[in-house]
Length: 439
Image (tube, rainbow, N blue to C red; front, top):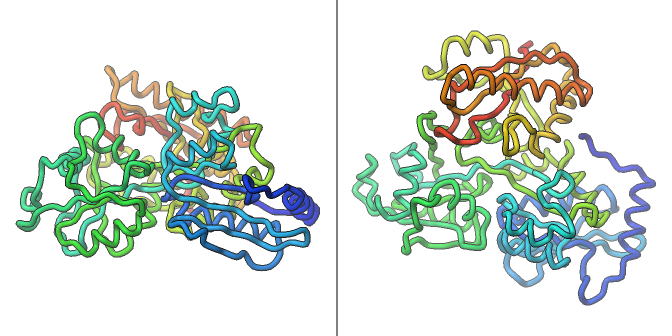
């Protein structure tokens, strides 16, 4: 997954870009529209990194005069190469991609079935060549630094935002009214919160303050002792993070391991979508850079969670069975989980790329297949034996996929329906963890 640019490629890319006519309807070589979460900081950093590879000199950043828009450009012998990043919400990105104005749609939520259907004649936005997971984010639940409340369940959070719980004293905090801060309706962050927290049970209280910007929302919560809000993980700033629980699973704070593995119940994927085989060459290059090792290092620098695996020794609390502690005693955990598309054992688009990332990790650290252990898990089933079988089949499917990618004989086992990371029926419970022998 490493990324390098030869001199010949650099010259060819610049020649292609600068040969493009820039009419009044094509003012830039590439336009990226969509999510404020992606577009505020991450997308400009990725664009800058890519331009530095294919151009020469410094990348220049200008404003269009419209809030949440940036133009990034670099000079070349053939002229200026420029990229517009417009961060007005995930839904705006789909519309501009579908119309042909945007070459890349930045989104903090998956494409909706209705959106995919609208452009199905041109591209399959759910396919590997169109859907690109560029980072993992944790939906951060924020309160004022002085608030003594440190954790809550997703259900309690829903009740707060529906206005059913209106005072912090109901949650063990001070006798103070709760002030609600939320992203606006165009935001993918709002879509994620609405889906994961409110669902079909709750409706947002009409008194909530709405924001286009994650950073502004967080800043206002940090100044309001009664405030609670949600934002992308990169926008915590001076606010306090809460730990969140789902069902009977333990409450987790978003961090490198819990978010990268998507165990944190409000973790989410950040996407860039392109139009499959119709994707412009320059956009393809940017996507390749973003998904590679160097691009993922920029993801970490931006405050989001990189998909480059690292090994950590997780803290296993008293809820973890002794059998699991013995199983993993000589191992560390890689910050990657293999998850599945709808169905039992088909790896999803992110997992397909994570196969290569695991192999890259082994090569970079001088490790082999003998050092790995795959542990499969299942959601609760009608019978314990059925859950055990499903968990083993999931681990086996990852083992086979690694074998096909060039890594044979990886050890695997299943751990059934134990140690859920979500409530019963949550798809996140069906996963395969990757452990590596400690040195």
